[in-house]
Image 1 (cartoon, rainbow, N blue to C red):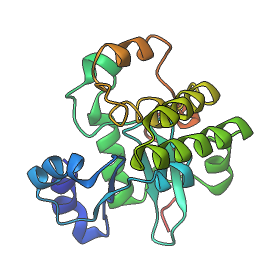
Image 2 (tube, one colour):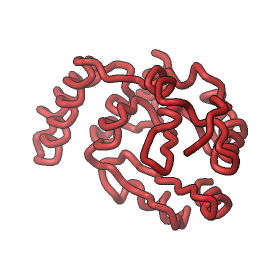
Image 3 (cartoon, rainbow, N blue to C red):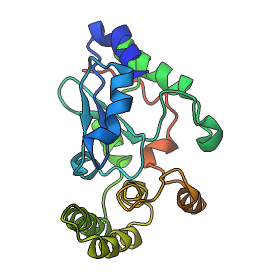
Image 4 (tube, rainbow, N blue to C red):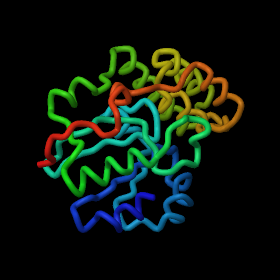
Length: 207
């Protein structure tokens, strides 16, 4: 979908940058190669993007303008309707809003509104990320039992951060689409403050 949008809107300045949060580049390679992207398609094995933007669930979309400013903060949206039966969201309204932003400058939010709808990390979340980073280091060095303790502690400290809890499942040998995931889903899917607004956003101009 993102490659098709790039081909459609790239001449108007739109460049999608897709980032996969995976433990190894080989995990994401089949999906990337299948899409044949000509736009930047990155793999983040260290969760740098997740920490910089405080992502708690994927897929997550962020609009950044030509000046590098966030004009629509992180929001759980989807480029297709493949999993609509699970999450209840249709892709068409979001994709229409994205096209309107690129073509007409509609939907960008002013800085104050962006700040009011950004999800900020708590001290517990920051500590959870430290535990996750330590667990990842321990796992890569063969200390799986010690890593497991820190993965579990990270999840306890940040129970609503699926990039930590679900993201650690493949590392720990757990199927991220298996029974453990559906038990996790019973606790409620993490949401961003941005999801309180309609996808049309505001009418301020993109600059």
